[in-house]
Length: 121
Image: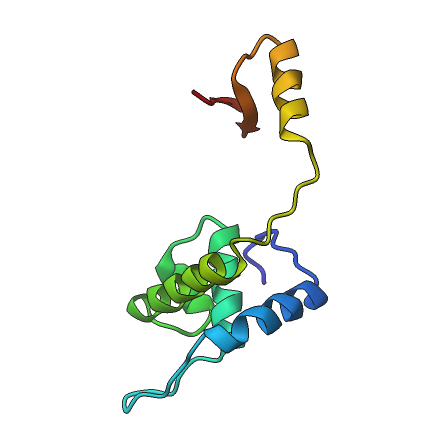
């Protein structure tokens, strides 16, 4: 794409995610138009989550109208939440993170978002 978006995911990661979600994502043809492929719906959703773009713009990139774009995104996000919510990767010890922030003078802090400290009360 020439828009300059930096969106990277390996094909293997995409295929693995698709393999895990495909049985739960139902796309059915309607009398008005054929259903979008599960592949397209997942790619559309990942792109929308990765870049700050409007539904209109993302829909245009994937050949969908603005009104049609929101449905697959909500369906895929809901499926990810329902099916993969227990799949959590932990590369850190939360207590060590809290202790590290405490040492910096930030009590009750467990993380930072864009350099802004998040207070946990």
